[in-house]
Image (cartoon, rainbow, N blue to C red; front, side, top):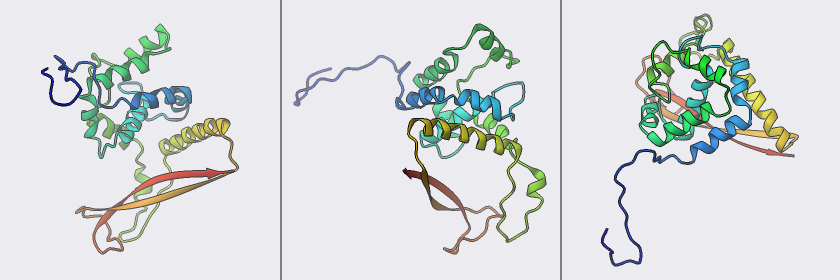
Length: 213
C-alpha cells in the first residue's frame, strides 16, 4: 500500500484463513496437556457417554471459553468462527495420539464431525448431565440452598485436585488463600431472589488465588 507520513508501511492480506485473534489460548492447550488433564478428565468424569463429544473435549472447550472472556455458551460459536484457533484445537487433540486412539475417537461420531468445538446446544446438554433432580427437589422457596455434589461435579473436583498436585509439585506451598469476588447481575428470572441491593440478581463469583509458604 502507498507510504503515508509516518515511517512504516501497510501490507494487505488477501484472506484471513489460518489467522487467529486468540493467539494466547494455545499456551493453555499446551499447559492442559503438560498437566495431564486429558487423562484426569478421562479418569474422573463420565457424563458424555459413548457418542459425540467426549468429556475431555467438553471440559477443554469450556475452559477455553472462560479464558477467552466468553459470557455464555453462545460464545462457543464465536470461537468456532476463528479458523486459526480451530486448526490449533484440532492439532492439539491429535498430537501424540496413536492411530488406534484416533480411530476410536472418530467412531464416537455417527456422521462426520464438522466442528472443532462443541456447539452451544451440545454444551448445554452436557452441562445438564451434572444436574441432580433429587437434590433440587429439596429446595425451599425463599431460602438459600446448596445442593450436594452430583457424581459429575465430584469428578470435576477430583480433576481439580489432580491439577493442584501438579502445581504443588512445581511450586510447593504450605498455605493457600482463595479470594472470591462476587458480582451481582440483575435478572428477571421468576425464581431469582432479591439481593442486599434490593433487586433480583444472580451472583457470578470470580476467583483469584494467592498462596504463601
